[in-house]
Image 1 (cartoon, rainbow, N blue to C red):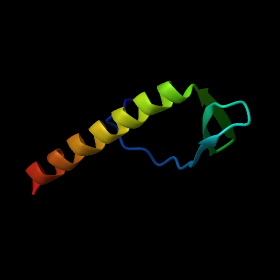
Image 2 (image 1 turned 45 degrees about the horizontal axis):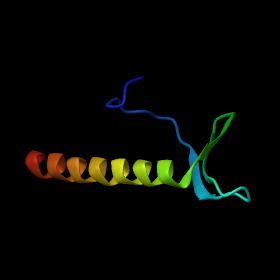
Image 3 (image 1 turned 90 degrees about the horizontal axis):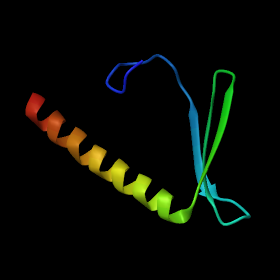
Image 4 (image 1 turned 90 degrees about the vertical axis):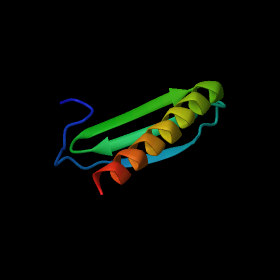
Length: 65
């Protein structure tokens, strides 16, 4: 499945700090538990990418209207 394909899958997403000073993104759904740990700097880069993708998605939504 590509990034631009719709999916019927659902998952839960949790984000928080670990006791070891990492940032954990925890994904759980349909028999999958995926804990992903990142250094704080990596987590900030991911956050920036999420913000940029959200802005691009907003712009794409405006163009369709």
